[in-house]
Amino acid sequence: MIKGRAELTESDVKKIEAEIEERKLKIRPQLIEEVKEARAQGDLSENFEYYAAKRAKNQNEGRIGYLERMLKTAKIVSDSSEDDEVGMNNFVEIEFLDDGSREKFKIVTSIRGNSLKNYISIESPIGKAILKHKVGDVCHVQVNDSVGYDVKIIEIEKTNDDSEDTIKSF
Image 1 (cartoon, rainbow, N blue to C red):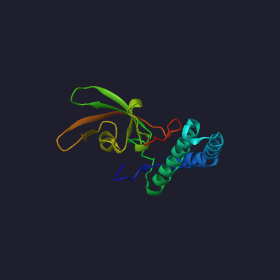
Image 2 (image 1 turned 135 degrees about the vertical axis):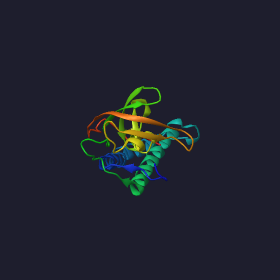
Image 3 (image 1 turned 60 degrees about the vertical axis):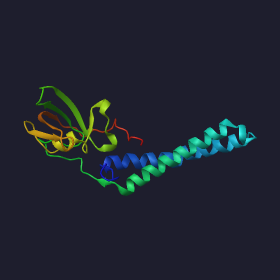
Image 4 (image 1 turned 45 degrees about the vertical axis):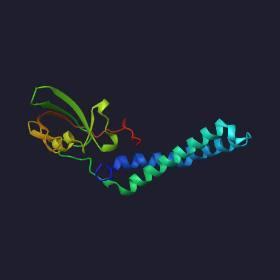
């Protein structure tokens, strides 16, 4: 994220709005009821259920607040790209020119980045370097002021499917 502003696609926004609605209309009432029931059990000083219910309610409220702030400050980015260039939600195979190894990544927004799934954020060094480039292009990935490397784009698999992705918790 750039200076606290998440870069989101319209699809990201819809998913976040749906999560907020779920948390406000379904989860919040359940958690409030659990707090009431636990409070009714008597002495609060030794009532673990009350503290657990209260904690779960506070975590839900925190998540709602976090998501609402994210939407308020987000920068909306396009998930479209030309047919022959690297774009959002595309799988991209690249070759690391220093050793000839290859990797395949899915290009996603920062809130969907997940290195364990090879989901690479458009805000990461690799994401920034290859976005909008074409098969055969050699791109320089600048990691920091003194470290960088070159990659070659081998293949682009176009997809706009982000249905499996979930919004990360921070």
